[in-house]
Amino acid sequence: MRALRLTAWGEPPEQADVERPVPRGAQVLVRVEATGLCHSDLHVIDAAPGALPYRLPFTLGHEVAGRAAALGPDADGVAVGEPVVLYGPWGCGACGRCAVGWDNYCDRRDTLRWHGAGLGRDGGMAEYVLVPSARHLAPAGDLTAEQTAPLSDAGLTSYHAVAGLRPALGEGATAVVIGIGGLGHLAVQILRATTACRVLAVDVREDALALADRSGADFGTLMRADTAGVLRTRGGGAGADAVLDFVGTPETLELATGILRPGGEVAVVGSGGGRLTVSKPGVLPPGFRLSLPFWGPRPQLAEVVALARSGALRVETERFPLSAAPEAIERLRRGRVRGRAVLVPD
Image 1 (cartoon, rainbow, N blue to C red):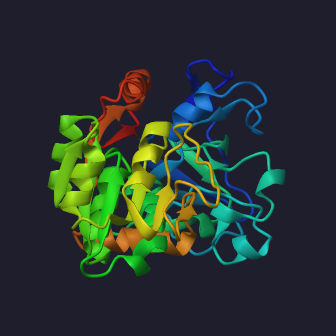
Image 2 (tube, rainbow, N blue to C red; image 1 turned 135 degrees about the horizontal axis):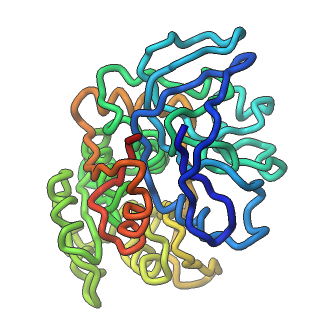
């Protein structure tokens, strides 16, 4: 079968012919129908030797949807032919966090040589992917694979970030979403569907603000010198109750903390290299709270799928055949993907 493999750190991944896996024990073989491409894939591809614990080579792709194709003799919980979406973060499977579906915060994460499908283990940029257990699968129902695949990271990560902020986002509150890309446009929709707050959006691209508008944002603005003042005015003058930063650069973190009202919270999801200096007293607002959400727990993936099936969540996608993965990767690097790039087997 064809697969997109990472064979050397810092080098472009390669198309390769590899043997189709055979499921053993509790394993499940999934026939891939769609795989999302995100900036995490770029971070893996560009990593310096030794920066990640992963062993080369492996197949990329952690946002995966398809159908169960074959079961190992001990597999249960899924039927052959059933449409499924992969829960991407794979922990040790034995600690207390993993036992309740919180593999994303596995207690033994620092000791593993992988972080999940396409992250040290063979992922879904291939015709088939082998999943260790059906516990890493969620029913996709009647959603198309192209819509379902991005829910497993872009949707789940955004949902998990919003869930941590939800108690502060009641009627009259303001949330600001910085970065309206694959995750940010879903965060806007999730905020609209699960909270009563006002949603403001920020990006450096006009087309991203148009996407924010289609996603339900109350207001969008380009990032400029006066953006903090504009957002404060739109938020009623007191500042934002919560900011979700899907970029994470020094500039976006400065904006996030500069528009936060006392007692507000910033959720940093993007990995843009920015840093915050925490000191007391200091420049951060009193009562400042910071969260660093990573992916999300398995039970929340089912909630994300349900939200999408209800019509409240729709992924804006650009479709590429797997053979065109280099083009999709390059467009993502240049910031020219609308919403989420999705690869489908040729």
